[in-house]
Image (cartoon, rainbow, N blue to C red):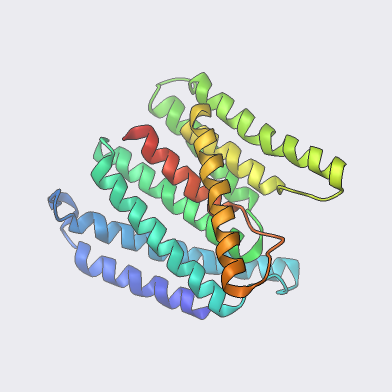
Length: 248
């Protein structure tokens, strides 16, 4: 995974080289500062995901779950495509203040970090999902509402956790196997804190559609059926789609 750190350093250097003194002079049709900031965050996410994967490997004492280097490079590439496309859409399509755009850009970076870690380790760290959840409640509550979060976002947390947890409990009782990890349930609850209850169906449908497309394409290309697919990256995809639909 050394290429992750190298790619992250390259992106940070490139972003720094084009971002000096330009962030306050962004032109809407040529957002050099926004591109530089997006690249810098993408590089930071890649570097942090490399560190987190190494930390989890040392903690678990095994590297059996680490994917092959070729697969991991593909995951990196898809992350960059998703993150930079989402950042561009956030800048051009969402009618928000500059400070609000920055908050949502950081939110996308945290989603990408969780997705990358899950894709490589099948683990969604509790520390990151809890930070995402608390950040959403703070953003929708004291920052925007100047008080407690509106009920839609509180219900988003509760239903976001209860729905996959309930489905998993039923599947485990019926088939004696786990369908959805608890990390995915916590991740969906954290997304509910940011997007609200009304956006969760979009998150869920887009994520499930992404899993189906990924599984079908993988089967066509490799003639092998993937019985286990990490859900975190697809939840991040669904969340970015729900964000755009919510504010556009």
